[in-house]
Image 1: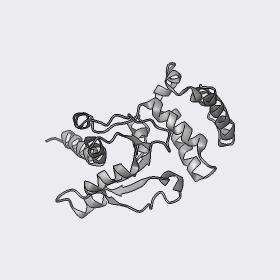
Image 2: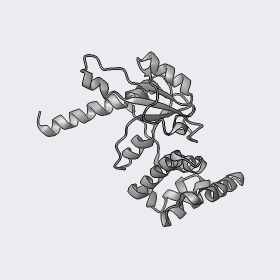
Image 3: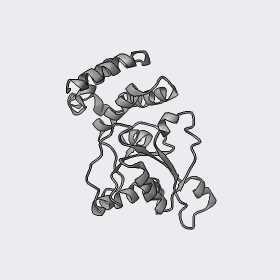
Image 4: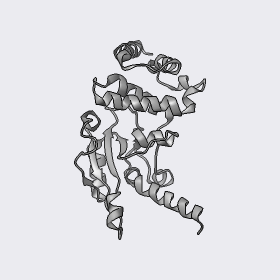
Length: 225
């Protein structure tokens, strides 16, 4: 095996290990989707993910499913300054691989399960079949749904470090993902976010303008968008 093949095999093993929790959840009929840094990286943002954030409909059910598979509860450390990110979530540590070394164990993925309602993300109501889970084990969000979720998270965030954190995600979207600048992308967003999107394309929206744009979104939503 040459160096290129070895690298590709190493990357494949890393991906299969990092996203193993999603395969487990989907195999057990639990819809889920990758969120946060991993989702941004999937769309080309040069960001190095740490925890693996996963949106699920029922955090308790998903956490129990992973615990049954050997995952264990992990107390927050890295994200302690951002308690809003941990609201109604569950944080679990991936079990060690059989026969792995201590170094490998230290690199095990921490999975943070986030409630779909909290992040205004709509998951399919029909459970995933085992066949689909095996053929498509690592579900990433459609880009419009990801952008909708990030916009809502930022507009609704309290004035805190958390708001700055989500604002970084928003800036990454508009700085690095070319698809959001295509002519048709605006039509794929929720109607309440379309004016926000067009304004952000012209000039980034500042934190001091968040309350005004939250009001505009809410008014649009109340009129049925």
